[in-house]
Length: 305
Ligand SMILES: Nc1ncnc2c1ncn2[C@@H]1O[C@H](COP(=O)(O)OP(=O)(O)OP(=O)(O)O)[C@@H](O)[C@H]1O
Ligand SMILES: [Mg+2]
Image (tube, rainbow, N blue to C red; front, top):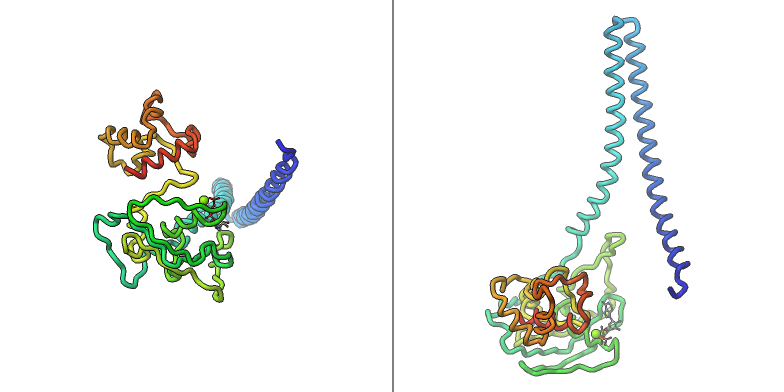
């Protein structure tokens, strides 16, 4: 389509070349190691024959030659296995790198940490105080000195041209971007595994976000994220049943009536009741069997639950 076949064919051939180069190097290396292992085995065998020729009886020499043949084969096999294992270990090393070496988010500021009361946030007041941040070192600020105060229960619309920074407000609210420079997770270059050095001369992120008068950077990260819900522009549905997508934590496993009640609230009850399997309908990968609006409503239901 769109006459892009040639571009994609070139891309495919290029990737194929890259793969072939590595495959050939691996195989040549293996051949080389096998060759040396075979040469050493042959020398050992020749040694057995030369030493045994005059000093052993014919029957013993025959046994010695058979045994050394077996050893020679085992030796070559050991070398080949060793080569295979070492190359497989590269994959293990990579998995280990991704599972243990990736920098993690810092849970909270250790200066005056706060454990909010059980019912926090009960009114839902959100204050942004002089919030200024960039996504990464070297990028321009997306929000500059943004301040507002939303009272609990207020419904607010934010308007702006595309790319103005509306979604970025939520990044600060969910602490996907940290405003306190001390909480900033380290960044690494995924290709090399080296730390990315931040530009020391640029101004750091600034400002505070408060929910019900509590500075969220002082609260445990998972507590913050557990306490607020989001229905994003491109809502995520997981592969599984509708029931699972609504009630991810499995809190209402024995109580379908609550799920239906919530589906009624978001006006999806009729649609889902019309499906042959109802709540047990399988959601396809990425929620592709629902429209974008329906996906948002299902996420809305999840947020309410
Ligand atoms: N993950 C990211 N890394 C770097 N820059 C980003 C990232 N996400 C957004 N930006 C930049 O931040 C700016 C604001 O983006 P944002 O997504 O907040 O816009 P928006 O107002 O929500 O736009 P839209 O109306 O299209 O949803 C844009 O210039 C964008 O290029
Ligand atoms: Mg947006």
